[in-house]
Length: 394
Image 1: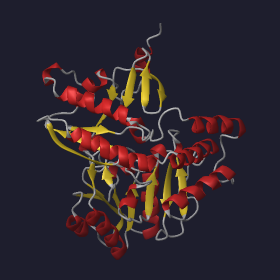
Image 2: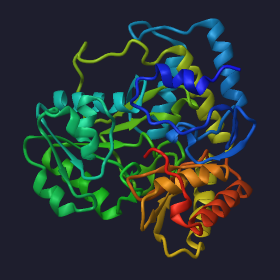
Image 3: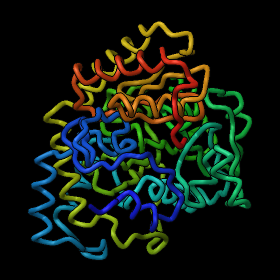
Image 4: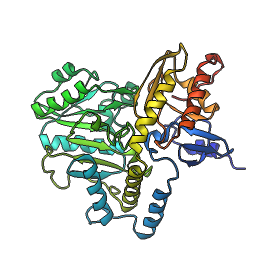
């Protein structure tokens, strides 16, 4: 029998440190490997699987559209694209949209649009923030391990402490084109922003002529208990970056554009695959399913349940449990990687967020019974001696 793990390793670029499991199938919040073993998925496609795996409506939309039309660039009109744009603008309250293929592309577009609109060059971002790995998005990302191999990065970026409004006030000048923030820092350790900080940042941008970019690539589409995390605080961003679950797991991203962004000159940006009919069909089906299943409501209720259950685990290793909706972090007093490996052995796939935070990002269709399995596994691995655990790549 062919060893596909070895085959993939032989041809992989090497930039991904892989876990020793071959996933072949998914349904809802469950995954199965090539040996038939079942896992509760708390990786959730790193935020792309909010709707769960194998959704029939998305699969049917993809199959039907693939027989009709797959490619149609934005220099030509398309009915599905028009419907999707209208739906996204309705959901966000923002009047225009640029369609692309990923979250980092949405962030790159936001920086370009902010600079050309304000005729300013500087961008202010937050410490611990994560916005992507292409050169502009990477310039706004805080983690030195991601940044340092590629220095010098795009000039004009600076970072301030998250949730520190005074530091932000000092950083925003008459040369600041935009401030970019996450409502909840996901990769940076699952840190929710305070209402005072987020609303203060919005007021500061409006006062000083800068644009507010909100990165909801991970927090969007029901993840935090609202359709968008902005809605917890009444935020009205000038540029809203979304992706991941926008199309039910099909690669897609979007940048929603507010009234404070001026008329954009033609030909300043573009994307060959952006807004292609296949992704638009998947997105329309996914958005319809999110509404039918009330994913934001389910995330709010299930997230509160998960946080409460995790806080009940009587372990001196746990420093904190925090989150919003089903974006949940458990901060440990030791490195997270060995516990991720032990959880996988017990049938739970989870993520880290920095060195010492276990991050749980399950599909929003996850059941209480499946969450109970997660909590039981977490409690068990935290009770095991660390020396018996084998690490996994971080």
